[in-house]
Amino acid sequence: MQKIAPLLGRILLSGIFLMSAFGKITDFAGSQAYMESKGMPMTGLLLAGAIVLELFGGLSLVTGFKARLGALALIIFLIPATLIFHTNFADQMEVIAFLKNLSILGGLLMVYAFGPGSPALGSKSS
Image (tube, rainbow, N blue to C red; front, side, top):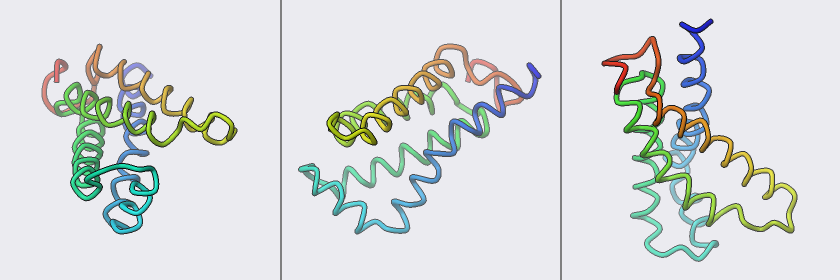
């Protein structure tokens, strides 16, 4: 299990980011409108940046290549996304989304601190 668990963990951790990036790409206008509804400026630029971070980070987790850097990219994405989109604590679903993001952040911190494990493309210190 120790040989396959890191790969399974990385795949499960990356899934939400890859699906989110795909959703943003296929409904760019809708994603941009949602961001605007939250009062965000420069939504086109920030949305493009979010897509890049989610794709790079998600793919790096799946492959294990540069996984620490990918985890860091996703951490950089996840902190402001959580604070902007999931802080309506009067809404139980927003509380759950906030806590889900904190849990994902915990997994990303583990990859950042300890590397991808194996199997992974590149070295264990990726």
